[in-house]
Length: 369
Image (cartoon, rainbow, N blue to C red; front, side, top):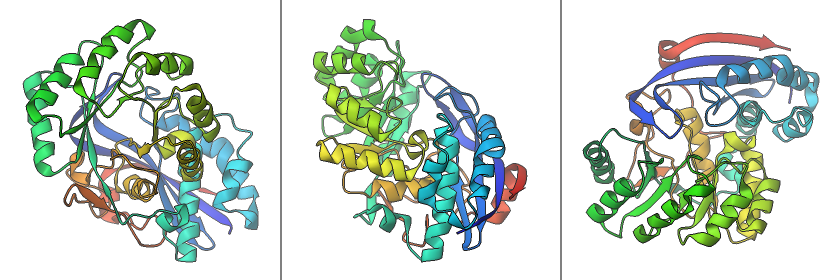
């Protein structure tokens, strides 16, 4: 396969409501897509980087820059030797920039699989035709506002609720949700590194609520601290930001720091590395689930294929399109009995809608080899 051209598209997609975490609040999803043209066809992918380097050290303008200056020239030079599997080894010299690498690898993989008439789910070895859907609930201004959203999501059929937490917004909201809906509700929390080793006693108070897990409570670089916390509390500790590769996942598991792992393909460099993390986790008896980065349909379709792999035994953040967007940029993903259908068409199994791209596109730039 030969890479002929790449279109980088910047889009501003309004959210239905502001989404607040411990590190940011956004009401506009600013996103970059990669649209590749190869001699075997075209492919699409979504970059997971935020507008600012708040979730990780990457941000979407920086991702576009490293793609144009370093990543794409190397991939154009591969000529007819280009494959999705060759992307990571070719770009290994580039330190980090995993989200930039992930978007181009995924777009190339989409084109490759479309040429082979094979779905991404089949390529990954997925075994499910639909996956259970959880929903992530941001930090709110009041408990009443929180309960309005949670009640709405439960009525829509979501099978798991994840509450974003931070110091000052943790014990009381979790207590209220648990007491209101009872122990049958699958409930977990996500701190996005908002706590420190000095907060272990505070986090231990959450043990009384029978949570599925607590996600990334302290700094992503403090893997040993997470191991100490896992020994100190009963709630299973799940790592997100800390897990950037299969090697790191293996080490975290061996240290006892990762009792559960959230796999986000954008964070780890793409779906090929995500599959390796899945395999390492399964081999060690560690449950995994698929996290999200407010993806539009292009990113959501690929995540559903990953979440259908056998080791994904917990509901992920693969919510319906309507969770975030009044209008998605593909045919919308619709919740049915608490589940989303896994696309079965070639590649990621879904295409963008051109007129909706035009509505939300801020810029479109072609790079040719």
